[in-house]
Length: 208
Image 1 (cartoon, one colour):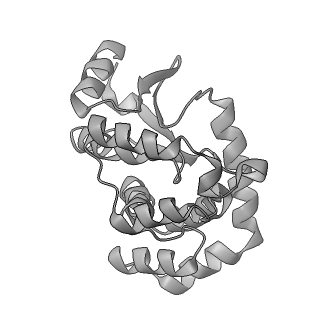
Image 2 (cartoon, rainbow, N blue to C red):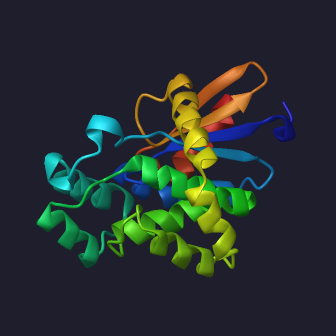
């Protein structure tokens, strides 16, 4: 099968620590496969009853330690402060709206926009519910801030995000991050979590 008949679907959540850890492997893999189009979908990990304070998830500090050990991801002191205070509310719906707005302005840089959001939260300790966080990312990527704010505030973006959560759930990702390879005959799980770019290459070679 020719590579131009293949594509990728990446299911992630901006407040998922393993997605933060996987980000570098994903970007390295994509740099080696510029021919593969990628669609990035927000999963909606902390929505509804699950959108609670960070202290409501006591496993997070230990998980972060493991993520750092296995992937080399660095959690910043500003983020650690949020973790220690424990009152920060993780709202994946707000983060997905921000991501959707960014993605609409620069779809070809979608993976790098996701990485910028993760850095804003996990390294700089910034809220992904705040407009200012997205304005700063817009500046980094030379995007139109006014258009971005309009996209975040329009009700249509929320509708799109809710639909996106359903689409992501229906793909069958049982955990996040999950990278799927889309072939003519169906979807195949390429991996996620602590997988290195090398392991992704091996799995990709097996599947094609």
